[in-house]
Length: 95
Image (cartoon, rainbow, N blue to C red; front, side, top):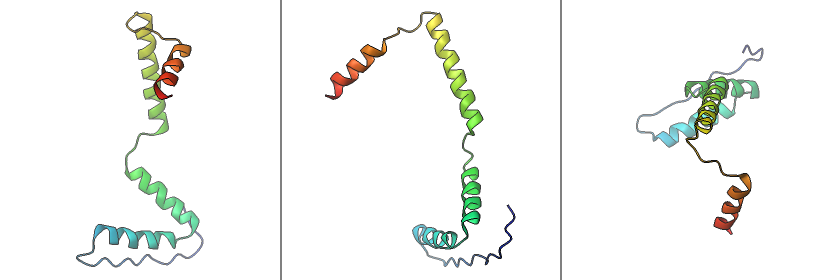
């Protein structure tokens, strides 16, 4: 993302002996001083750095799980319980 506005450089001074909490507070203060579009960019980059599964990967995993469950039902490996019975058990347990 190219920002046409001039953004001051972040000047976070980390001093030896500072706690992680103090460092995080300083970084947070500086990040909050950025324009909204720069904060969005920062958040996106931080989330990407976590290497979390992407939606297509999550969708693929759910599709595989659904296929596995259908296969178990078709093979008679699992016993199906009606929704009515499931909700009756839940209501009984939590009333």
